[in-house]
Image (cartoon, rainbow, N blue to C red; front, side):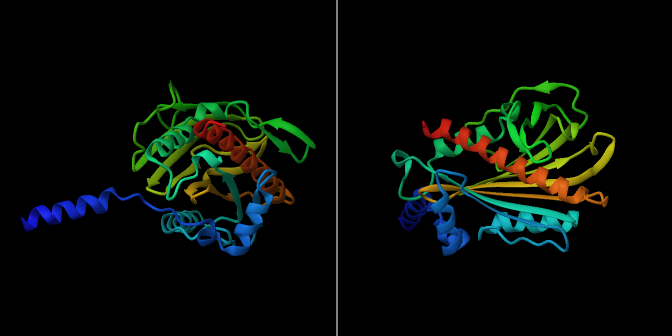
Length: 269
């Protein structure tokens, strides 16, 4: 009888919804107010660092902080940009607690739908105009990228997943990237790493495995908090660091706008 009672107790505990942290708990009262005030325009906060960089905007989320610190320790970057972005959930989808299982799975499937990055645009500072980011983006069967694959679809997000993608970038050329995904009850995260060297024309910009992009989508009750960090060991040519940094910052904004559109599809906007 005692075993039955204990089993019932643990079943009740396990079936309880996972409550999300508030935006204020994740980023602090001041930054939360800034993000909420900007909602509806471009709700972002950005930091750029070149010398002895360290995380300044990373939310108070244990798994994300561990991932950022491990990635920085492995890379030792000389260029580091961070961005916070707030996606406001439609009022019809705001719940007491966190996203439901269906929303979480749909959002994850949107994050692994790498083919949908084809054709997205970003603002080119050097050209003072909008420009295509990825001319082509597709999942491939490995680091050599010989055989294209369809975007994967999951009914339940896996705890971890590795994908490779061939992405033809009009600035940095045709490259293969590794995407390592990590999921938890309240967050979807991935790290993108270049497996090929990147150049701007004939000028080398970032060596093989010297670029990492960390993206985290964290449920914050009435909104989704998206954190993006781009870190690189960039070449030390005069003016090249600033140029690469500006390019990465604008590209991150393009990725965040892309994700916002993907989330609109999930939430029915």
